[in-house]
Image 1 (cartoon, rainbow, N blue to C red):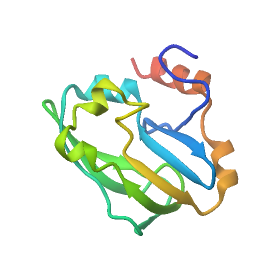
Image 2 (cartoon, helix red, strand yellow):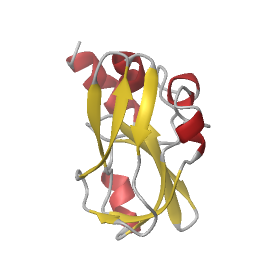
Image 3 (cartoon, one colour):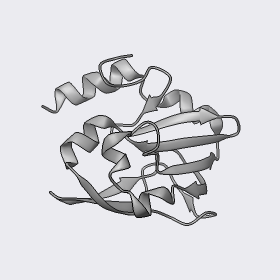
Image 4 (cartoon, one colour):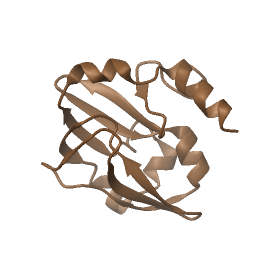
Length: 130
């Protein structure tokens, strides 16, 4: 594990993580992003069946500090959004890589996963921003 970033995940420069699970992928925001935001109080997540391109805005996350856009990590179609976050948005802060996941999606091209950042590369990108 590189710092706080699990090695079995891939990352985007916009602070999303992605985990491959069979034909689908699961995504959320990283612990770095959650720390920067502060306490998350609300999320606007997409409906199943919506298609997004990589880097396209798919929703919003609101914290005590700010409202920020959420970006789709790879081109694909939403399979499910995490409904538990409606009642308990704080899961994003408590367990960003577990119960705080945001999306389950079917990628257009599963091979694109390999183009995302490794945990080490993502950790370096966060240091470059401090």
